[in-house]
Length: 632
Image (cartoon, rainbow, N blue to C red; front, top):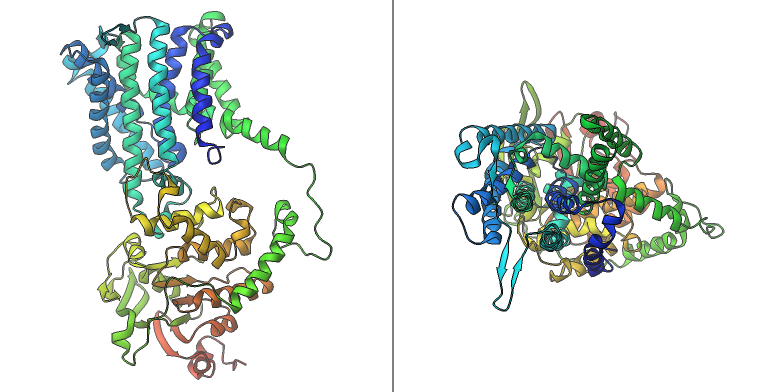
């Protein structure tokens, strides 16, 4: 729905906000509870961008919630600042600046360590608010007397001094915050954030500065928290010190989990359930402090049985009800693809058409963006990559030793060697995933030794992985979009409000790559629904999508059936026309068919180099790799 009718979401949200004050009171909601739901829903939007879309679980959002609220309240009460909305925005800006400083510290670690750092930071803010800064924040008493907004329009004056008038004020800002968040998540930045959530390693390997984007998401989450904190003080008439407590962060996490992460609406739904049950259990059932125990049990049950939250459960139910009762029968004589799902078996006709197209591609390859350059007889002048003295030590273990390696423009080079020969480490050094202990790597005349994998990808050196590194929750097309965006936009750009369709050349390059890897008919299928052979093609497509000057393929035939290997060899021949490639693989026959020269590694050193025919007949290679048996 988000993609096909983007403005329908906004229209339905506006309609719901208009209808809420007329409907919710009949369901037992008080005006105060409804207003609190809006504040918590807005607070949660920023957290959902951070956690649901970027995959960063922060327990420190209370620090920003309290900071924004306290700055706003201080301006309006102590300093008698005359403009309420302006004070809220100032509080938001101060919170965003604090978010930058905190993010630079917290994002130095990932996973559970990041979460623990945010817990510690929240506790630090709580301590500072209650002690050193208590003269400014009111300490345990908070800051009372926060005024409600008044707008003088000349012909009339708008006063938001009642619960229902405040609802209009809060609903407007919730809607504005939601629209901005939707626009961000539909932008190139939103696409990259989703990729980071799914696979940060691959997001960096296709050329994105993931630390920069994580910091951006962290600051966005902080800004939303600060803005919501300012609105909380206005709604309640005073800024409570409880905004800084860990309990606030915990409630936010639970509310978002109840509603559904990665939806933007999950926090609003979760806040509705949480606050309604909180009021019901305390006022109607008179449970006292026991309400937390009951609500905790309800939370556990919801998370256990609705792992994607209430919104995810509704989506699953809708998908179940609209799913076809039975898949159409496969055409007579058609064989299912190994490992295919029911949907793929149903689409076997399209698969057969793709195979025919693949054969045509092998015979007549489509135009490629990187044609081969004219080769000179001087290897040094025509080399695209030169590695000299490349050595990697892990303590006393030497993985690679004094490797000299040169690849010319337009050359297809194979790298082989027995297990433990150091091929993987060598490949990782070439792509700067692993830094060499000594030696240097020169790519197109530039020393790239010590660079990051993101930077060398931006220079045009990309790699496919032996074990698929895909964005599994995205579709095939969305996977390729992530790779193409890195080339068209660079490694970092905050075009938060730009639409993907507005990027020149994006659609054309994605479609070209889909055809090149023979997945045009599967473009809108989630990666989780692909067969293994299709995933291998997509793995290569991610490396190919950014039009690399040098393409490194790490065991592209790994794990494939004989039939899939034949198809993959045809595909690699197609994309290899006029392209510089380095390929590692254990399938000797297929590799010799694909490459022009072969480098053999043994015990971390270069044993010999030569043409496939020379390597086949080389006695040293036969002894080291082929066990002394002459290759046919």
